[in-house]
Image 1 (cartoon, rainbow, N blue to C red):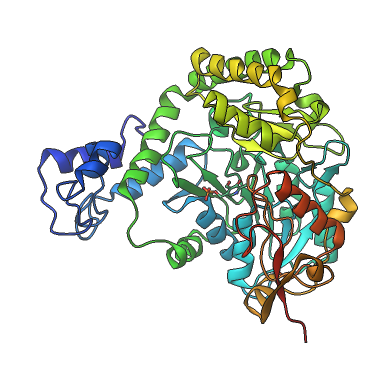
Image 2 (image 1 turned 90 degrees about the horizontal axis):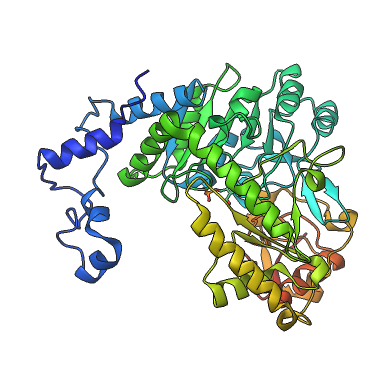
Length: 488
Ligand SMILES: Cc1ncc(COP(=O)(O)O)c(C=O)c1O
């Protein structure tokens, strides 16, 4: 295929060149009606290219197949049979993928370290999750992706499960053994879905962890805006093989998706694919070299424990690691990641990707260079110099792994939509939760609708909130009270 083409960008350029005149949405009419103060901040280019997909980018019947051609090029670039663009993030793509494999009441094996969008998919669909346990590192307080053996065991217990879903890479860059998990699924004739939201760049460099399509997965979901250069919300899901019908996948996406997709986001996806095919290997090589250099420099800062392969991979841990997210454990300094991240933004105008009770993480992409990482390093050194200012702030009571896992006693959908009441945190202990309680980031729910709340988990979350953890999906984000299911 001719990867120098970019059908969406080309069609957009033609739209401008031909001076097409819209009597259609968007009502700002290419910015002519937009508030000048908004134009000043956003730039005229945003409005100018924010055009309707049908009777705009393409004609009324989409006879130019602009989107289809762009999707075919994307599939070809990443070794998939089909690619589908989505403008609602992987949050929507992952739901479409799940619904194409299992329906209401049917079982799906799901790694319990799933993102909250997977749990939303369970709630909306009524799919019954069969949880597959991650591999917990009790010393570092981190969940590594579930092992292939864990998936095999769950398939033996639930041979009627319709398929499996695993998250890889995780937001920490840790990766599952996708080829082995795909083999387990295929032994049972069942499809594997990979939530690869953090892996859009993986197909384009051999030193990065294996890309799900190369590992034999049936469907994978990527957020091109995360590790790639798409605009926010730009997501693509990919399909191969005959275990998931692409027509079903498309129909499920149609059920959930918007009828007004953003052409700006489509253009960002199309541009990314061309850029990666033409220059991906070289720019990712630069990013890998840069990340390796920055890792070494952070490790030289006293008390900054950079997490690499030695810490994150090996037996009982992850199969592989994406080295571009730079995860730094600062527990030894007696400071939470929350306070460190807040200081970095306030004093150095440097924003961390991820902050948890003991770590901060800086995401490096091919868009970084010595100048941006120089600022990062200076900020981290500044943080270290003033670390005493942050000591003494509240700490988080993290229970041992076995106490973090809650029993699912009601289907997530039934608990979410069933009768519920708001009760105090102490009264919530022993009750079935009716909402998701998700520390964000990374966005993996600590408590799901349908799980019975225990004292250690409540203590963990409440001490977390006191220390700076954000739980945005709770009805009461202070966690003084919790929404619980009213059991018969
Ligand atoms: C593992 C994982 N899956 C899915 C998503 C949802 O992706 P998006 O933000 O593109 O909707 C995220 C977002 O952080 C994620 O971390």
